[in-house]
Length: 207
Length: 207
DNA sequence: CTGACAATGTTAATAAATTAACAATACCTC
DNA sequence: GAGGTATTGTTAATTTATTAACATTGTCAG
Ligand SMILES: NC(=O)c1ccc[n+]([C@@H]2O[C@H](COP(=O)([O-])OP(=O)(O)OC[C@H]3O[C@@H](n4cnc5c(N)ncnc54)[C@H](O)[C@@H]3O)[C@@H](O)[C@H]2O)c1
Ligand SMILES: NC(=O)c1ccc[n+]([C@@H]2O[C@H](COP(=O)([O-])OP(=O)(O)OC[C@H]3O[C@@H](n4cnc5c(N)ncnc54)[C@H](O)[C@@H]3O)[C@@H](O)[C@H]2O)c1
Image (cartoon, rainbow over all chains, first blue to last red):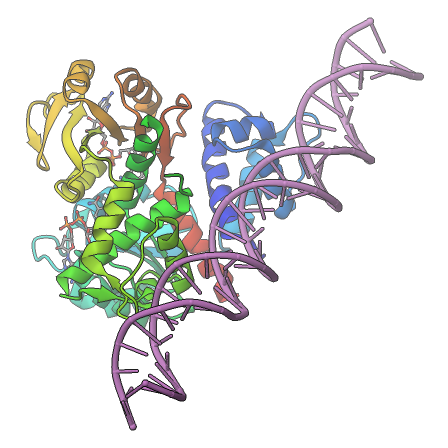
């Protein structure tokens, strides 16, 4: 199914919100309610759901469980996909602890580090392998997605290795923009950008 | 100056990249070079710079130092702004360590936590104050921006407090979407969304 | 049973963001 | 110093994303 990247992001957010609803024992939700929780419009929600071909039970809103399922069939893959974190420092540990076990179709199965203090230990719930074994481990465990949280200077090299060893998608938290072949999906995020954006609009609002 | 949010984000990225150039002793850069480093087009770069009214030295490209300065005059505020992290757990520490001292106009001056083990200590370079003193400290230090990294259940409450105590911008790393008054700028980021997006496009590419 | 309603799904309109096109200009070569 | 070239700044065109409009449909009150 061909979907705009923005819609994919929102589908993920919808599911996250819907999972929250289940926790509240809320089994049906209206488009405007879901929208309000995410600071978007009801039309946006309905349009996105139209794109994935989901229909509600009329007049009761969307069946929360059913919609979670439906979103799953769209954005999850059939079999689960294996994920690794490269560089299990402060950020790597935070991500590992946060992500581990959250998504049934995405398994965080390994981390890699070059620090002898860390290798062969279980850190934040994930086994840490030595950087030198990346090729072997990545191939054996069939790792498809790499989350890169090494120091900036190593980022490029690590990304190249990961691609060579079979990774098809990279989430880069490093300051360094990476270059990858066109068939590898790359997503980059830098917190500084978010903070500076907030600062800019705070400044503007004050004027 | 009124700028699209997307442009503001890119300006931040331009500056980050340009700072990297200085490190490489590269004092002039062409639009297409800058663009390539960020995986965008040269036109995009030129258009953004047009919006902020920057002109290059013709035929030599942009003067790196000058452009860094110029971007600063646009996205930074005149006096520096104080920032606090609320919840100095795994993620909070990672952010603190990363951010501290990176931007001259944004000072990370405090963190807050409710854990007695943490309060009144310096963690990741930042003094940690007790959650109970938030009002006093936030007002005294004139904190304008809060980065929220507390456990999800506390996020709403913390955000309300922060707003009440004078915060004008929030960067929320929590899973919970927040509600704030219209005059508070809110930016939210959830890594799960990024990871799921990567997973989706990896899956699609494989089909 | 029926009419008013509330919420959806969808098409059409608008707005925002990106890309293309190109004239203008400084530089370099010869 | 003339001609070719590389790069910019900017307007116009295109594409993408969001919002508005509205017909449709099941529900419920009376
Ligand atoms: N901390 C943040 O909030 C934050 C935010 C955005 C970006 N970043 C970026 O993320 C990266 C990590 O940040 P951090 O705070 O976790 O740093 P960190 O120093 O705590 O962690 C880096 C880890 O990578 C390991 N490492 C170094 N070289 C390696 C290699 N060749 N192969 C495998 N592992 C290697 C180190 O041993 C260490 O464990 C940095 O590039 C930083 O700029 C951090
Ligand atoms: N770790 C990640 O990569 C990651 C990613 C995205 C989102 N998040 C979210 O960020 C938040 C923090 O994640 P974490 O891994 O750092 O968790 P953590 O448990 O390590 O840290 C939470 C910190 O908040 C403190 N705290 C609790 N209640 C508080 C209160 N009322 N006032 C002030 N401080 C309080 C705790 O003492 C602790 O130090 C969570 O909401 C998590 O869902 C984490």
